[in-house]
Length: 79
Image 1 (cartoon, helix red, strand yellow):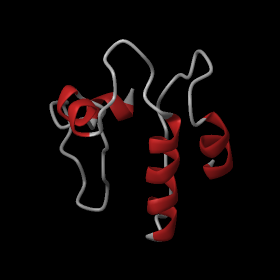
Image 2 (cartoon, rainbow, N blue to C red):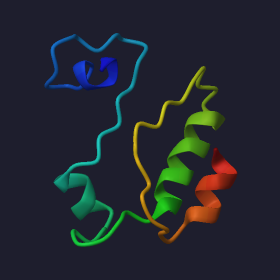
Image 3 (cartoon, rainbow, N blue to C red):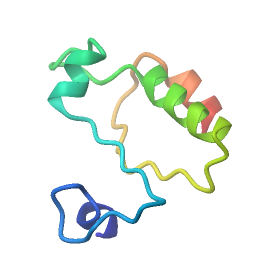
C-alpha cells in the first residue's frame, strides 16, 4: 500500500510536493475530538475545501467511514 509506505514513519521518503495529513492523538486533542467517537466529518470537509482552494492537483482520502457521523453532508459536498 503506497499511502502506508509514504507515512512519515513509513519506508519511503515523502516527496517535497506531497503533503500527508495524519489523524493522531495530538490532532484529536487540538481539534477537541472525542476518543470514543468518530471525528466530526466537517473537519475533513474543511480540509478538503482548503486543499482545493490552494489549487491542489489531487486529494486522496484513505479512510473508511463505516457509520454516519456529524458533518457527513458537508463532507459529501466537499468530495
